[in-house]
Length: 122
Image 1 (cartoon, rainbow, N blue to C red):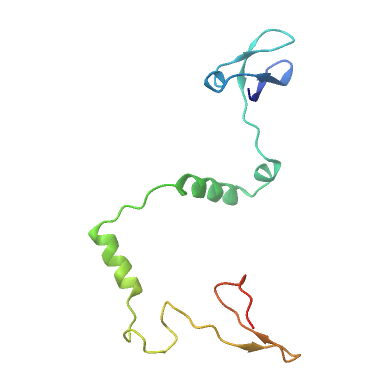
Image 2 (image 1 turned 135 degrees about the horizontal axis):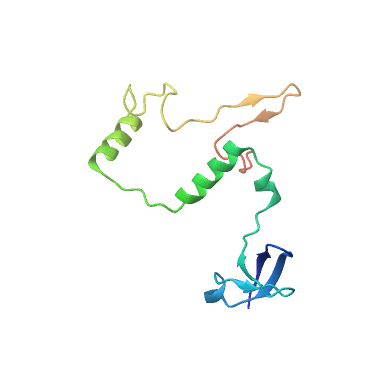
């Protein structure tokens, strides 16, 4: 059975065992017996976050599993965004698929920056 946190207005936060279906119901304070509502503890890192970042984090979490609806308009926008102005395979470097370029460090070693930094090149 999980342990939930509840807050009494006089005695503060206390823990109580409860089944999951009764977790939203108030629990009696062990000291005074007053029914107290459940509190959800948040990570201190989230509480110390800048308000704009916290709002963005909340918005991203809410939209994370939201399905994307395909409409003729959205498909046309996707096609227009993906179309290349010179045609496929022109090699001008403006295509959505970028080729990695080789860079040399001052000591002469090669670096291959790519969209996959976890890959090991040789």
